[in-house]
Length: 126
Image (cartoon, rainbow, N blue to C red; front, side, top):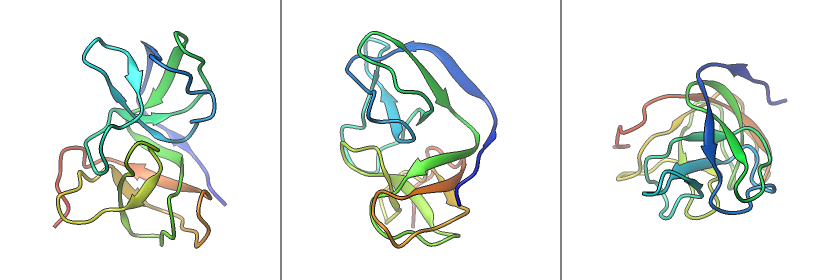
């Protein structure tokens, strides 16, 4: 069962698109300062979306702590995770991916919600 231990949250950036179906996914910052889904798999992201904002609404983004994150494929507790391309779901990190955190719970089911210790932003998986 997934759980959270909130850490630092950002709560003043607005969504550039409808993210109401993207709760618990990694998000990124567009060059105009609005929040978007990741443009490429494995890129460094801002954090995990905690709410369900429509376009133009304020996003609550967890930057550190333990967050619930929707998985993209099978993930085992202990796996390093990265953001999957355009979906923002957590995937197992591979070489050249920016590590977004480490799975504390896992699931063999695609789209399951797992717990991820956020951290390691900017680190590259090796």
